[in-house]
Image (tube, rainbow, N blue to C red; front, side):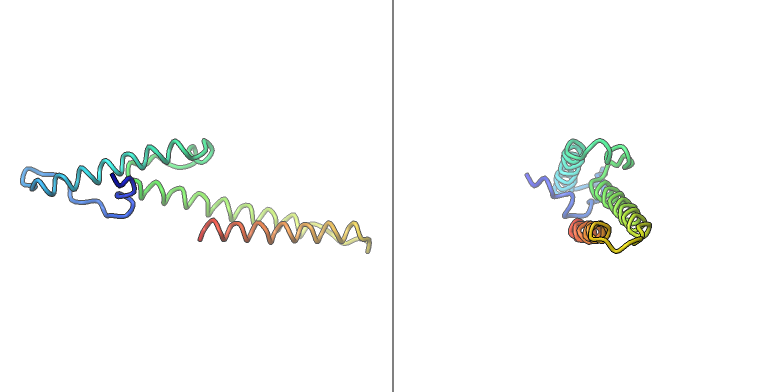
Length: 120
């Protein structure tokens, strides 16, 4: 059983009275894979993500919604880090203050690098 079959293949035409046994078998295979994939992902994602993503019956729609949620979260995090960094002022030239700005710049770089890995 290919549990990822519904992710890899487009949904076949729905079964009708004139469908052949091969078409019926193909649709049943896709539908089972789709149902199992949706159930599996819903059990594995955190409650915070599950609550912010609409309910979907098709796996491709669910994965797209989860992806869109992460893109918006990533943008919000980057914006927050940039605002924190830009609000810091260099009042005196002390090692401690300079170190704080340097650490904040490092945090922004790490967050961006991790965000790019998650999207890629």
